[in-house]
Image (cartoon, rainbow, N blue to C red; front, top):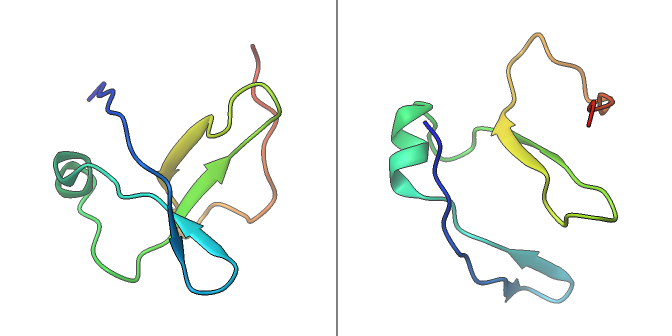
Length: 66
């Protein structure tokens, strides 16, 4: 399900920031409030991947082949 959307970063609380995720993507991945997602970031692209965190995945980031 390729999807590209522009999102706005907004401030929450004293030290946090957030973005919203597309509703279609949330429904497609059957996510609900409180579910975790994995964010892989590097210096070239602020957010490289956001994907549903599954129980079998560890919290250690995986190297992404370019």
